[in-house]
Length: 244
Image (cartoon, rainbow, N blue to C red):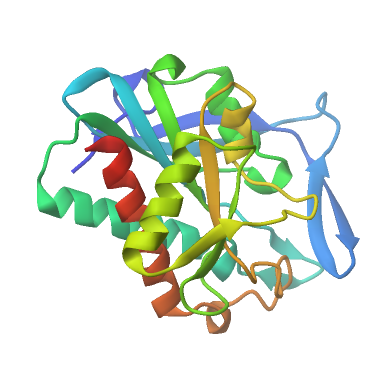
């Protein structure tokens, strides 16, 4: 039910390239950093579509990253919580909005970023070469690692007060959840790419997101369906406040 908004407007895919990665284990967590940018690069893909609204020049982005860590020393790192839970949340909200059939005032752009684990490379690639004008984007809600912990217990990452953060706060209140400002402990997510361009942005994340994060134990047993559903309710209410 979405309009393709990838490369040339005829595809959902936006293709970019990444250099090799350097793998590091820090405090038991596997992490990536960028390798030599002069070496052979690998294609990656963002997935972008839109529920088009009445106002041509205003949009809200709802996003999640869909990459994870792959296989390291023979072990699979499933990334069920980080970030299949966020992708599932965004898909649930998207299906609900499409099923309701109401045309929003602002277009709702659904984006799934790749290469987040390398330092927000996918969302950064979109910022560098946007597939539609960036000045149309009035707010960004990003969803990352929302599947574990106490049901309805979330925190927000943002750089100061903004309309995206306010919408999430109101969405949490309306759905009976909690979304208080949280310390990111030096970590971050794709909302940061947009903040750096002056666009109001926020990431919704489970308060206990760091549990088994970036380990081979981040599998389906870590993810609670009720928690993903609670996140979807918060995000749905927030998007309605921003787009309708």
